[in-house]
Length: 279
Image (cartoon, rainbow, N blue to C red; front, side, top):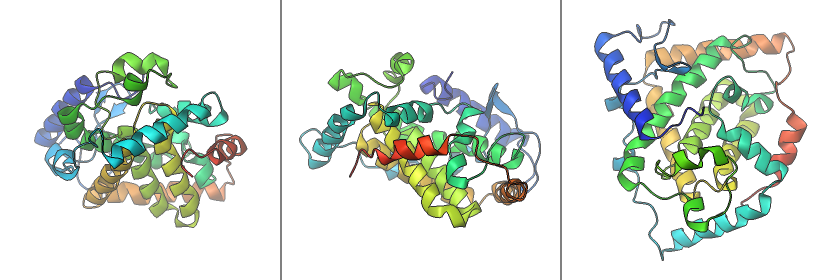
């Protein structure tokens, strides 16, 4: 099951964050410790709800029909159809899966290193916890605007048909996947600045996978990037996050000293990313 499951997931997440904030069970700032779960496999984030960037206050309303921005959304959605059943489509299917351990390997090729609970335990937890914060940062705008996804209007296939019913009840704007991919790219670029170009390119492709999948508009992805960046900026004020970021850096240095290789087929990923949707 994908970690994103609509408004019910976000309501449960809010309840957990309130609970952990009141009880202090997330831990002492700057110390690594057991992290409570929202449900099996989904960790609590670093921040209380009130500390997250407010997507409803920060983002404009989705592009109105008849506007230039809406025309661009439609144009890019139309162009995505040509990538159906290509290697880029298959990469988009992989990018749609935010469950762990699968999602941990997203930036493995960009980093030229494996990312797993065994090889990079601190980085693994950093990705899982920050995922919760980033997704939570998007929910106010999602719920307010409840924008229809592209496939609901153009009646074209999506890359994850099993998720169609759920997506129909979860607002399209902004994209939580795009926010996540960009947030992870910014964090990993800080951890491994030598790979910054490859990391940012992968973060961009991760967001564009939502266009390729026909499940998000271009503006959903762009504003998702904005929320991802804003969440990372706020996370840097949290001592536990900063400590975990440094521990993740040490994880990465350790696997490189061991000469461990990426966990994914990097040649296949590069070939897929070369099929760009937006020229």
